[in-house]
Image 1 (spheres, helix red, strand yellow):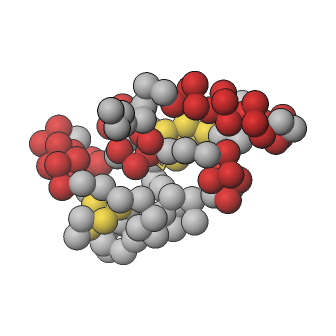
Image 2: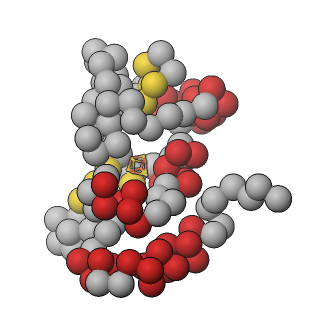
Length: 116
Ligand code: SF4
């Protein structure tokens, strides 16, 4: 469930960029879907780029600067993070969800698309 099984979407333009500049990422695309096994083409249960630091326990993205737009805009709400069991959510974040949502909105303000 961790961002696998085709739950993330990717645009044709993003795939084209990976093919040109990051073929190692493009290897994990099959029939326009992510993330797929480069060997079998079958969709993976887990995102292959999600990495857990063995010391800090924090999760990071191996392709942070090349991640798909779906990831750039995620998460929108704290509720969404709870439903997805997002690793970035910490126990203290749940004490005051309104404050956490405000912090999330501030953190994501540069990432989200503008609809102006
Ligand atoms: S942000 Fe990175 S680790 Fe997380 S789902 Fe997207 S590609 Fe995978």
